[in-house]
Image (cartoon, chains in turn red, green):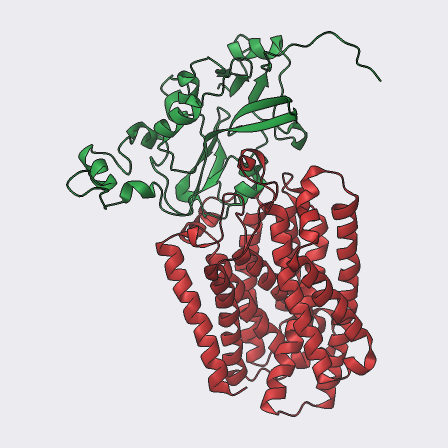
Length: 367
Length: 241
């Protein structure tokens, strides 16, 4: 795709996002497909998608720094930069989810350490600063091992704390309690690998840039790991379905039972997990550029819908007095403003990445 | 320091909704919000059908999951057991709504009391507009604005934050009962100190077999229910096969 056309499309996405931002903060969150029941919807699930992908990228970037596998240094700088861009995309969606983002200052002025959300906010602040520092170091040609280790540890912290955040909600066991503290890092790693493969291979393919044999081998390795991860996640995903969705008799699980038949669930299962696993298990497909690009794109699409499915599993069934006068399961279709918010996060992330790709020599290997 | 709780006598409650209406007036509650609400259930099949009515409000749980999860302590416990909210600290994440098993927390998706900001009249030279009516009576947002609510909480909560029942903490500090308790024509709501063994609520809790909503979740609600209402009778029987 020609660069001006690509940049133009991203600008349209950002303008639509800015329009949604203006409307949301003047008219109100009533523009979302809100009811008092559906309190978390597409903007939050998109934030979760981006933030876990960023954590997954942190796991990839830690391979050379933390685990000492030197050949991965070739993709270190690109991975770190993509991590920052994806994290900013997640912040965009989060800001448009929060009702009073200016009050976030009270995270520091009035802390509540019993809240996983407080820990998550603190971890993200530290994470962002560390990422910028680590990238700056690499941009100057030096890799800092202590920084790399810290980024790795905090990425474990953010992805597992997100699981704690949802696992703490005794009122909504369909959020699958501590299960998500394992599921989130694994799926994050999978989507991080997919994002990196796409971000590395697509620009190279469209610009006609020659990919070295070493780098090509690295992509094959990453694709193989992604296939293995998708397969592992698929098994956990199916056990989640069996334990919560089929065998559980608790009324609270009716929301999840409902979601099993939903479009997001099936996209996650088939497009996001089953097909990419099969594609990446076949060596002849894995060896091709298009095989890797297709599998990575499918993983990302599947994970995006998976985050939505998981958020909706927790909210579609009204609790307590909210159930008064409502059906047992509330249906959800995102509004155009919610779609604009998701598009805003994606466009902002891709714009940052595109600008970095052009100006920051992302293929440079640190000393 | 007292530990406040409420007992709701389901035999006395006739389901008139006075609690809900008086609460709206006292706390300037916006349309669509129910700090004081109800759960209705029907059981049986026609003609043997029964209608159950359970008044609900914030349970001011001792182990309040909304407080535990709030990242900024906007939702917090007072020493007297009341679960209170500070809208100034609220970031609008709605995590409290996710954590609350009772569905008693509401989010201001838009500016509250939208109807009363309407400047258009229904009949020209015939009726006044809602906004003019508010202005004429010197109200703040609504014509029936209660300034007392402003004493401990924003009188009308803004867009982007949550809100819920506070057991009328602004009345309690003046030695008055919560408005819903005072307004109940059947005296179905009894309020008092759980730590005072001689309080009327402890008398009732010892006399009857109380229950609380979703006790298995372990939140230790401070709203108790006693008795049940049924005027129905039946012929003594052992059933049959």
